[in-house]
Length: 376
Image (cartoon, rainbow, N blue to C red):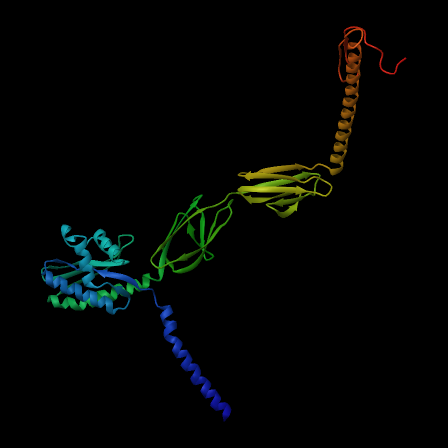
């Protein structure tokens, strides 16, 4: 009995908790509401006040659809007066409507005309995109009878615009261009066509774009489609180049941009671009090169043996030592000659000794040089 009571309480609690969240979840799923303005319909063959009355009814019916945030009529009249629309008659063309919408901060504007031909009344309504200044949606009605019958048509037109807008709010558009052209376009894994590519309707939300062409690296990008907006993609695909790397000796390690890829000999496809290559092998000096890959290329690395480099270094050191030793001997001979000149200068005669620092050099003497010191 207690278990049954607890179970019933749990069910009621769950239902109460769930019902409290239902409005919130429903609100999150509602389509976005955009701001809409209604410009008075132009009267053609009917009285101005009749056209104004029909415009006001259209305004009210658009509000009733709860699909839009509709700007108040008084505010629209203020803007129309501010921009001086009287200078060019009724504000019914796309340029004027977009200008009013920009001032109002609206995304769409509704304009049009109501007229009469014989016994038939005509209503033509256009919804204009403020950003593109182009007609977004249209609705029209023909009616035979008294003009007040058009009041019901205003409700029908408002519902038609709301329904069409609700559908359109689920979509955006996509335009893709590429270099090179004629690239295959994949959207969410499905082939859709080739560039240049123009898709008028694509569901809003996240999408994965892939562009593929033989001989080029696949181009990928995640995009977000927003309601009623066009997403433009301009892709530049990188050409794939064949690169071959070998070395002397073979089986050296290859690093590209700091990452090990393989041992020589090696060949593969790489996208065009700049790369830093390092080739190394134990007991050999590593060699590094920076290349700008724009076409197929073949590289040969001649690695130098560490033992051979040590032998060459030792030979250089020995040669430097030999040169220093010869230079030291040459400096001693000069000192002897200068000393002799001093002795003779203080005694019998003066002489000048010029001697090169290398053995076998030439000696020019003026006078008779004395015997070297220490000789009897």
